[in-house]
Length: 258
Image (cartoon, rainbow, N blue to C red; front, side, top):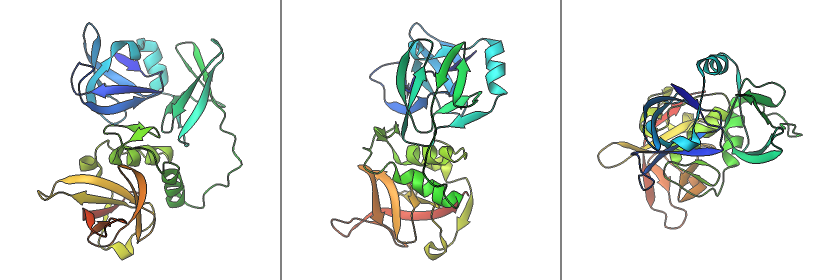
């Protein structure tokens, strides 16, 4: 059984309880495989990044086999701005969709899911970035000052690996959800002075576990989610606090995925 998200965001929790820890968020247009159907909760796997957890059954729209086949074989569009107004012309309603949302069977700003029409307007006068690297850093800068939220993936609350996953998705690059898995993607850059804007930088704890990730703006600055999405100085040892001058995160490895 397969479902799809037709709301802006749906919480995916560690267990089947409202008080359970937020694992991540499911975004509009993402499809899930349903493992187990409970009285209120569904145990699901996000088909985009394989994250597994529990979602409120009222927030997941179950697809018929025919609709699932149609959507899985169609191209999709990923919203490249932090949020966008989406019209539902049949019901004359609107909703706000977060950046990184998927529009399956996208055609001229419109997608259809189970006979419901969803319409967006992507007209823009902004010049197209000269490179994918610039596009990714521009996308990331749109999230400046977004508050930190463990498991979050929107401009109203986002964590470090969620920020990386969303802004790369905006440019058509699908990455794993967690920093510990994102670090397995791409090729190693040996030295910070060899890095480029858009490269990922991973940080470790005293046990040498990957616990944080950010995106380089240049060889001296990183943008990352820690308290909020912000820009901090970085050197070959790690991230430097602008308030105290102390190191807040210890650099482990730099990876290039573009």
